[in-house]
Length: 252
Image (cartoon, rainbow, N blue to C red; front, side, top):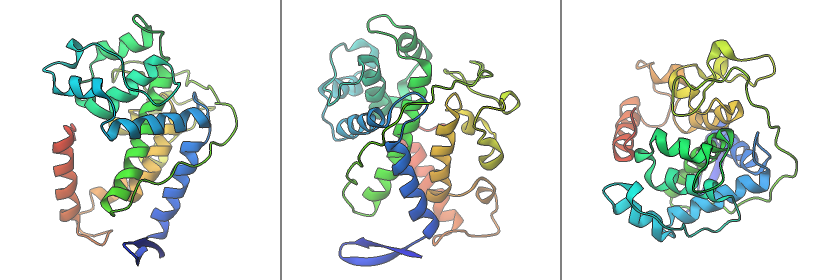
């Protein structure tokens, strides 16, 4: 066990969780498949600012019967492309009302220059990991962690050749279509639809689920009701998970 300071008291923290938290922050600051480390941290900073309620347009859209009836310009903290800013703001504030038509308008272009589908999917991955990290701090009564310095380097820009748009609003990579040059997260984390969500950028599957299995449970542990793997019981974990999913409008 390692320790973490909360309200002046040192409390135990699982070594595996502490390790994956550090790995996750390092990955957020590192070049991804389609964004540089600096750009990934800009996505993080933008998402945090929106979460703090700093965008008037997002507030108006959230209150509207349909977000697609409210036009305007986002209050932005970054120099990211307009379509990336639009994607970040919608994912953070109103993900439950994202439609396929809206996604296609982003990646095909129109009112603003197009955002590559791969870049959109990587944005989802970055925000998903950030949400887990920041909610951990929030739940422990800690302030958000300061952003690290970006790690230099160029994105790999490797799109899986076998990815197809036949499962979700974006292209995904089926286990049988993984190529020899593709990172393959399925043997480690499972190959259900939820594992395929951001598989157009396979590293983002690793990034999310490497952290998720420490914040929650490993895939095989979820269905093992004979054993408890955390300090609270399986039933308590699922009560919290179910309530959180309901509040977030999550399918699961």
